Amino acid sequence: MLHPIGFIESCFREKFGTPRQGSLVPSAPARLRILPQFIPEQSLVGLSEFSHVWLVFQFHLNTNKGFRSKVHPPRLQGGTIGVFASRSPHRANPIGLTLARLKAVAGDTLLLEGMDLVNGTPILDIKPYIPACDRPARPRVGWVDRCRAPRLKVEFSRSALAGLEKVVPRRERAQVKRLIAGSLSHDPRNPRDRSQLRPEKELAFFVLHYDAYFHIKDGRAVVSRITAADEAARGRPPLAPGLL
Image 1 (cartoon, rainbow, N blue to C red):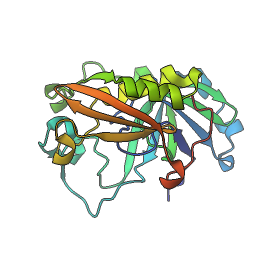
Image 2 (image 1 turned 180 degrees about the vertical axis):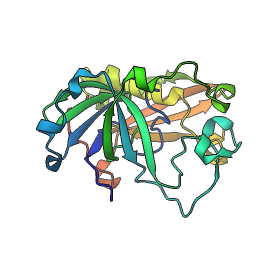
Image 3 (image 1 turned 120 degrees about the horizontal axis):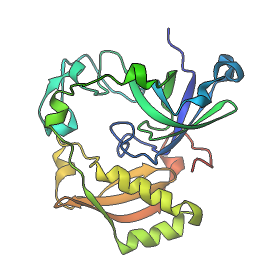
Image 4 (image 1 turned 90 degrees about the horizontal axis):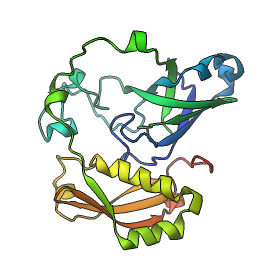
């Protein structure tokens, strides 16, 4: 039986728009508070000496009905690959692994960056990143090296910039803008969902306390609006203030 040691507080509030891998959006902040029964005043001793940590987590939002031996990673643009040759969340067991930058340990809480987990994700374990053990010489990365993920140019419309000034506190505006741009630069759309791929189709994702509306055309992601999210209506785990 596995028991979460804590739950991620992440700037990403829903699956859509959350980066597909860690470190793709280096400025993406998160916190992890270790639950009291795991005695954080003892179990975290020495961890602050490390710059990065591995987080073992549960894909708690999966809707899998059964095991599928082949999956469709987004960068394959509709192609298939064996599930164990991918990092797809749709696995035999809903367990994931991600690498995050450890900014600091503050009491029972880890302050993290480069997050690719949705808010409320259960964390099962923490392991320090050790280059001598975790970074092999001359690794091969298979099909991933042949299928480079596209990068989009991100632009903010006048309406989006006005919305940013209206709903985001001044001291947080630059980081919120970086978060939105970093997430959209990796194209969050599902390449198998034709409705999302229609030119100039307006989509939105939920980041921190805001909805960022955008459309994509000709290799550009244009942010059209930024509004305060109706958090009470979303049914998502709350986000405590002060994450940025």
